[in-house]
Image (tube, rainbow, N blue to C red; front, side, top):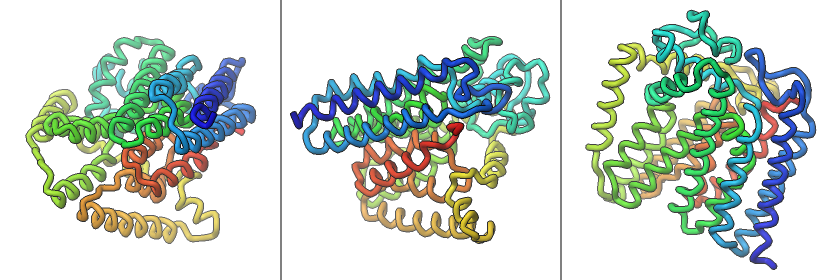
Length: 402
């Protein structure tokens, strides 16, 4: 009985996630964004079902730690949990339509998403659906993501549903890849796959929301897996792709580089260099010299606090805004210095590094967990695993209208 206890708990997680997704098909569901923002209304039952799914997920993880079920059963349930939100409309965020908008500018609008904001293209079919806050903002994403977004925009045409499901599908595949790669890297393979693949929060914001953070997680895990199998050139390519989708993997690569030097591990920079030159050259041909400055609107965006960010929570406790940001910055600098020391001793604790970023950034979104959770699972670092679960529970209500 103890050996099969995890599977029923995982199956319960699947049923609860499916029930939560089914609520999105109600007429005028507040779970489905519209008009460039989240819809009016409340979705308390969605929150209840998702909390229930997270509770059964925790029970399943506890059962797997006691007695691991068949890896095949774990993988099958991971596939089901991560794919089931594909049966729902786009959930809780307009980001997929914002991606569509930037891809349309480059592929069909004849413009440059790094120098011309979406509002400059009144015929852009994504304008009514994309996030209103991004209408006057040039792309904050790396060139690899924009390059891929262009053909996706061509395939989607003028259909916001086709665009949404395109990004939802890619995020679902990326989340599953992260789960399988975490299992490949970890010693407790079933636990690592379940930690990522059975996570209902990742499912809702991956296959449900179509966020590109799932791509980042999969590419980092692919780089780590390729490096573990001594395919160093291909690993370098994966690092470049991850960094040129979103910039945050630079931090993790720095820790890995220090670890490799300390452990006197085989290193090769040829794949990384070739991929860097290739992406930079392609981006320069397509977008001129403006694409490197995508970091500037991203920095401006980071200065805007989200309500769930811990610096904002400090302000709610009466700490002045500048002091709260200073505390967060000091915590990040001190924490990263400690992580560099750990890497210098031969252990790059990437899961903890991801949690440090989430705990100190003033702009915190629940879908950032798509790269933190797989890193913690692959590391098998208990503090990182616990921190990720706490962050999942803390961020679970974010974006849910209640």
